[in-house]
Length: 224
Image 1 (cartoon, rainbow, N blue to C red):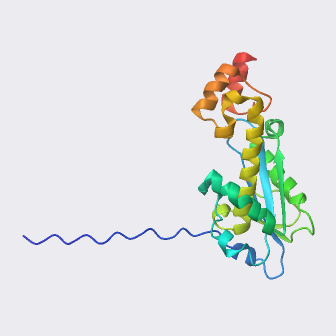
Image 2: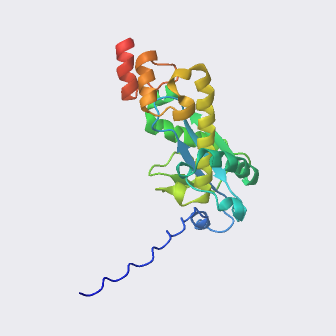
Image 3: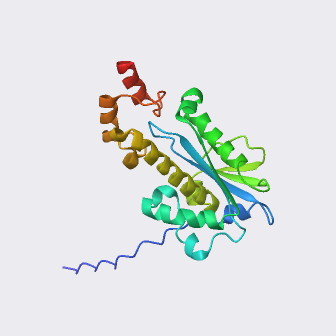
């Protein structure tokens, strides 16, 4: 019988492509471009947080740029280690939020755009000439803007904004957790984990919950 061909040596996975500045550079030389991203659309509690970041034309130092990625792809400890370096090397950055009450009043989509708009207008120094916005929708910020699907894995500016927003929101949820320890917000950041849902049914709705979200609305209807 013919001998079975030896299997090929497994190849190591290709290195993950890190976000770069090609989208920023596409606006042309000398343009001041900010990246904007948000964190916290899905949780049942807490604000939605957005950040805007303007990087220098050459970007971050190589040793830092090599670590930058979509915040969801980074371990919490690594995000917290990178965040001060982003602040130190960015030309400008700002963080803003829309509260749980604003989310309930406007809906999460409009509140997210509001947080992005607030972050953009909170940037120090000269206003950016253009903005790269993560996702499909654009806030009304008054400058040239481009929506970039999966922008936090493509644009270094957006990825940096993602990291700043995530670290800021996690810190806020840790602070809120101190006053409401039953819900595990220091661990789940307000997302609908089994722990959070179980605590909601036992301890009820807090002022920091989003009552327009179905699990919270159901519990609110039960307890009043």
